Amino acid sequence: MLHPAAASGAPVVRRPFYRSLYFTVLLAIVAGGLIGHLWPDLGQSLKPLGDAFIKLVKMIIAPVIFLTITTGIAGMRDLKQVGRVAAKAFAYFLVFSTLALIIGLVIANVVQPGRGLNIDPATLNAGAVAQYTAAAHESTIVGFLTGIIPNTLVSAFVEGNILQTLFVSILFGIALAMVGDVAAPVTRALDALSQVVFKLVAILMKAAPIGAFGAFAFTIGAYGLGAIANLAALIATFYVTSLVFVVGVLGLVCLVNGFSIFRLISYLKEELLLVLGTSSSEAALPSLMQKLERAGAPKSVVGLVVPTGYSFNLDGTNIYMTLAALFIAQAMNIELSLQDQLLLLVVAMISSKGAAGITGAGFITLAATLAVVPGVPVAGMALILGIDRFMSECRALTNFVGNAVATLVVARWEGELDREALHAALGSGPKALAAPPDPAAGPGDRDVVTAD
Image (cartoon, rainbow, N blue to C red; front, side):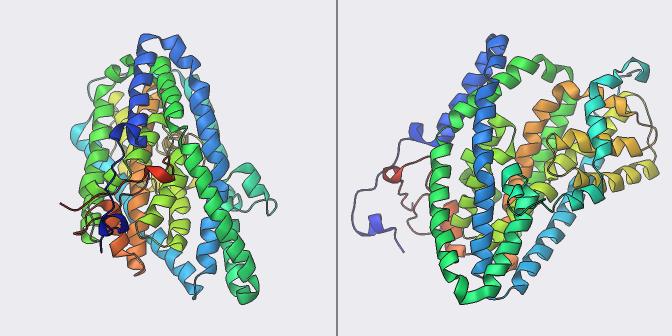
């Protein structure tokens, strides 16, 4: 079926590429990098721009999650579906998170990026990573699980805790569904409110280029391009491994489920550039949820899988943990036996869940893992502290793509993935398709793309 504009003979209007969000964000990242490199002090002074934008987005995350989940669950005819979706999501998370850990371990053994550095452990500054080791000791599985329950019904929204918001939203959605017709006015009101909130998301996304500019200028100004050169082998290995995981592993998963990883990445290019610029996948969470719904995933699945995946489906973080741990051991000429490496794998699986949702979780989970594995001093993390910021961007990008794929796959497993909407959104359908609207675009800025 042709897009209405095309079918009616209306002129096909293409929005100039320079007005699209991805182009302005890309331009902002390049400009920020140049400012940070040429005038480091000025670049560091621009940090508040990035921080302010991330705060703006975090301000809206809790309402987006709440409205998406409650209205999605309230619309379910079978409440057993909630548990079924959650079970399938966690099964997916467990399999692919573990696979990411194994891939990081294998690549580290094959490439051995730390070999030849010959670092003397006595020369390392343990104090430089003290704050991360302290945070790792404070994060336990029990503490994490009890922390999911908020102190009050509204405190989750006040504190901005994603998992607490998810917990309250699921309970509220189930309550709405159980009450039935009596709660219909509440459900309609929440549906109407969700339209307002997502319009607010579109307004906030107009500030994305400013946020990306400030954040990237700070990163380059504070850490410098020289930090990349010093430990280029580790950074290159991590980026290539993450790319192989996304294109190879997740690409195969997408192929099996009937869509292309490359088209999905193209569809999410604005959000990916935003994640790259800010080093925060949370900055693109509201927009991701909106786009996945537009791509045919039902609201109930998007609401359950995406926020949960942000804490439990951390493919990039898992690759980083095993790769970085072995890099540190290799740099200090510490030989880890197969038994030690298997222990590292098991501990990383557990610690990655215990520190979920904590700021700087990648570095904290690494500290928690090394604290248990004998023979590798936690102080060795000082070796990679200077470049962690550059690797955090790759972690965030990989995590982001992994959660997008997980949501579409779980939706397909549920038999609720709208194939027509998916192919239309990804631009893979045979007919004329409406291009997915830019989150920062106004009503008059829509594209219409005709088939070749």
